Length: 273
Image 1 (cartoon, rainbow, N blue to C red):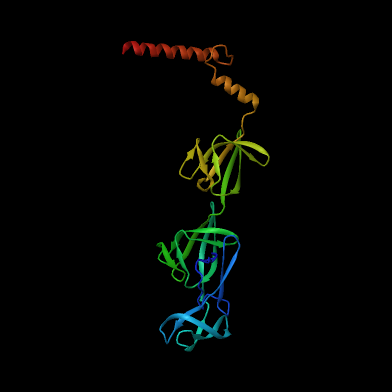
Image 2: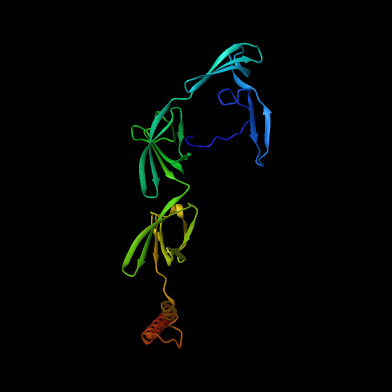
């Protein structure tokens, strides 16, 4: 895949893969130990009509490729093996980071295969393919480089989260870059540029929620307010507990009167039932 890192999963190299003239290869263990093993160069022998081991007799560079003169270890026949790099082609990409998108052209092998969900490296970032557009504007789950019209991809190693801060009647916006799995929760305190803000709401693009939590990869915007100071928090608690006898606050008598009237109406309804 474009920009991906090759992985060693087998311990046999063909002529097309080995860069060691004598046919040696090595697999590295996870502990860092190197296990070296003599390996045959595998190629199709025209005499045996099957892929067998060969001895490289001579190697000669040809442009960006190479020609090997090899000898079959089974029938001793000598023949040439020509190795040439694949031709390249330019493919258009639309790369998205949050709500920001840009178009670019990337050169890839002409036999490259793209699939939905594939990830690749580009510009020191990791991208995930989300759409493969064909020349007729339809989409496909799998397509080759010489058939695709546009590859759409989103950044998946980091995401951009937009923030809206509100202080009274004033509001301003900013954005942060974080990992997709970072979690934000409504009601929690968030420190931004040295100031404390309370997360008021989370917007996913489909709707806004005032409760619960959400991962950064699913968030479109976070709304934040300044948290109340000590005196404001104290007054709020008093208002919330105002129905308790002995609490003094503005409008206490009116509140108590409303409670008494509501209790009377409830009692009447119960008697009628």
